[in-house]
Image (cartoon, rainbow, N blue to C red; front, side):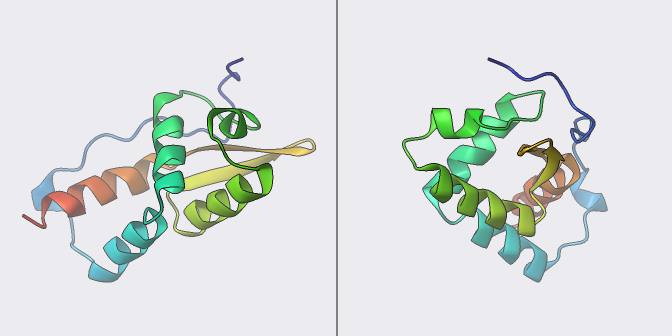
Length: 111
């Protein structure tokens, strides 16, 4: 079941032209650290495929316990790659588009 788009979901960010990106090694390292586990990469991929906040659906798509998924979500949120908003007894998660756009642009500057 797909959740409806909620207020916590910002509109998708436009790609950032590489020549407009200020390369920040520490910021890129934090993003890379947050994405340094296959489960967190999977979570980001799940959220990128959706146009809505997701609550319990993340756990349904991964072969991990709720508590494990929660810990991975916490790390991604701390790095600023996702956001989470309280929706009653649940927290709904979605991508932070500006952070993903910055990450993509900084990675492209590595080459």
